[in-house]
Length: 263
Image (cartoon, rainbow, N blue to C red; front, side):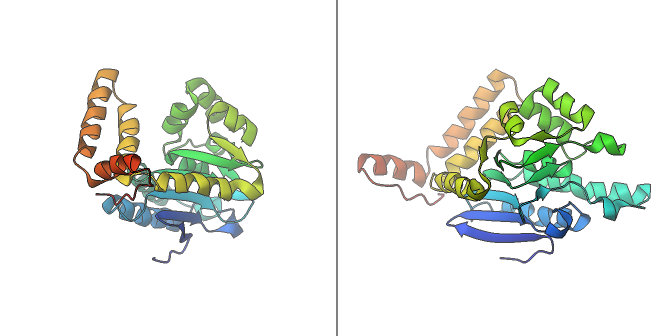
């Protein structure tokens, strides 16, 4: 497993990749190198998704998941340098969005600005009870540009998303749960335990099925219903001739746990 300057990668259980944003001294703020490192990780998963069946994205330490863009690095940047850096972040978001493997965000602390946008790239999220969330770009004279205006509105609905985006005010974990930004709030010492329970449940299912389900939901949600239903059937039909489909049915009838191979 390759080493990265700003990330820590490990495999905490079979078929599960954990990606830890690893700049705790800077509240895991997103700098250019972290953007490049995330591109490398997720481009690799996009090119060969067969090694892992679930990805967990979290932050180092207990204070922050990711505090957003590294404003110390950005201080003094001219317009050309700023936009060049932002192209890196745009590529990062595209690479994360294209990841075919199910992704869970384990939000161990503050997820502000770009940190919240990274969390929104994941399929769903669990949060520590002390986590806080904000889209604070408007307070800096800019706006979200890593998918925030689009992904937040899809997660919360437009009215709640506009409230967060236009005020820049933070919300706590309980409110994030109520609004649909996160799926579950956990005690701080239970966050990774509960995330891993869910990740292992996903990893135990047929990987071709989970990838087709993810794609069907993601793509279908952007279509009209008739087109989305056709897309779903195409995804379904790709699973019929697989070994895993035959193994799943055989295991059910033989009253045993299936052994899925991703074939």
